[in-house]
Length: 219
Ligand SMILES: Nc1ncnc2c1ncn2[C@@H]1O[C@H](COP(=O)(O)OP(=O)(O)OP(=O)(O)O)[C@@H](O)[C@H]1O
Ligand SMILES: C[C@H](N)[C@H](N)CCCCCC(=O)O
Ligand SMILES: [Mg+2]
Image 1 (cartoon, rainbow, N blue to C red):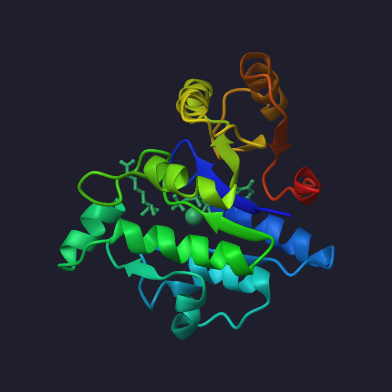
Image 2 (cartoon, rainbow, N blue to C red):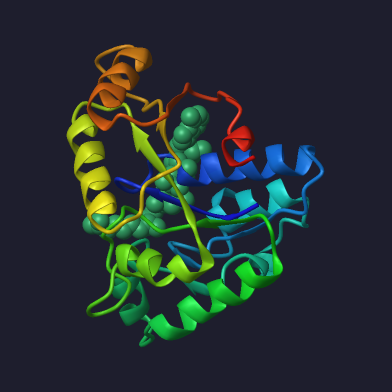
C-alpha cells in the first residue's frame, strides 16, 4: 500500500481529524495501519486528552494516556508554537536527519503508515528546514501526500498556493480534502467546486463531523 503524508495549508484545519478518520477506516478494512505525528507542539499532561497524539492513539486502539504519547510522537514540545520556536523554548532542537531516519525506518516496517505533518506546508522545523523539506526527504519512501484544507474565506488562495508549491516539488497530492471550517461564507460544496476547477484533482468534501470514504483513495 503506502506511506500517506497528511499535510495542510495551515494549522487547526483538520489534519488530525482526517488522519484519525483514515486510520479507523483502514483498520476497518483489516489493514495493519500505524500512525505517526512525529512532531507535536502544544503538548502537556493536563490537556493531553485533546491532543493530536491522543486522537491518533485512540484511532489506533491504543491506550490514550500521556505516557503512551511516544508511540506516535517522538518529538514533543510544550509551547503551542512553530516547532523550531517550541523546541528552542526548551533548549532543544529537532535533528532533521534523525526525523527523516525515524520516518523512513517506520515506513520500511509498517504498511500502510499515516504520517501527520505539523501546521502548514512551510512551517519551520529548525533554523533552515520546513515541513516541505521533510516531505522531499521522505520521497525515497514513495510517500503519497494528502492535502487537507479549510472552507473559511481565504482558503481557496491558501489551497492553490500550497498545491502549487507541492507540484513544483514533485509532491502531487493524491487528493485534497476540504474540511468544513466553523465559519464559512458559502456552502462547502461551492468551495469544493471552485477548488476542483482550479486544482484539477480529486477533491473531497468533509462536512463537520463527516466521515467520507478516505481509505479507498489509497487502494
Ligand atoms: N470536519 C471536521 N468536523 C469536526 N471537527 C473538525 C473537522 N475538522 C477539524 N475539526 C476540529 O477542529 C479542530 C482542529 O482540527 P485538527 O486538530 O484536525 O487540525 P490540524 O490541522 O491537525 O492542526 P495542527 O496543525 O495543530 O496539527 C479539532 O478540534 C478538530 O477535531
Ligand atoms: C501549535 C499548533 N497547533 C501547531 N502544532 C503548530 C503551528 C505552527 C504554525 C506556524 C506558522 O505557520 O506561523
Ligand atoms: Mg493536528
